[in-house]
Length: 354
Image (tube, rainbow, N blue to C red):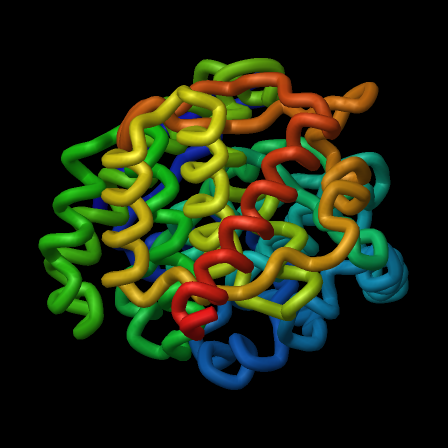
């Protein structure tokens, strides 16, 4: 087992890579443990849960709501929880978000940690202290930034993941490579067959490299005032696609990355050759579902938490492995969307022989 530490305001967070639940015994309290999980994870792993009060939520994105958090706080209070209680989120990205926000709000904050059971949460959702829920179709609008005491990533748990959830995690892994590590990007592509077979040897190494990228960024900017914004690459368009089409998060982000890379080329930040490289490799990985941009996409982006006074902090690429943040006006983004839709319509007309 390897550990990665993140020191931030409020304490130290430790990411335990490749461990098992047995490694947690000394890190958990003898009493007052509240385990938040979902129905799917509970069905598979309940027999190995540490001793504590188990609070299940319904599996899926539909549980990322303020009401679910309020209900969990009420259930904890009814079960006798107090300021000394400890919340353990045991599950994937949704569980970690909901459990982290519940722990942040209950009695103004109790200790918490995660056992991360999905690829998406092991490389991204459970790491860095962001805890958020959705407000209608608006992603993660209500939330906090509060670091978990630890995150346990048992790579053996990935064997039970449905294919869509595994691809969702791969989308975020490619994102880390695209913004920070060109070599990792090519290594992911070269390892496609072994990754598809969920080879634990290659998975452990690539997950570790991906987590190190996120951890290094979070250490420098835990509250997302600067460099941490790079981690939003692909998310501005991706969040809209995710909510509109019901796509898995990381798959929607991967499609958002391709659109953001085309925007990077459109603005002159990135060469068309680099854009094609990113697009082709994500297509080969099975990550880019070709969908139309939803209507009023700019209006939806304007309600995104990255928007400020008629503009958006947008993550662009200069090349695969090198990302930058630029403030783009909603007017400029609308001009790009018009170009994107017109180019797509013309391409379809050519293919149909019109």
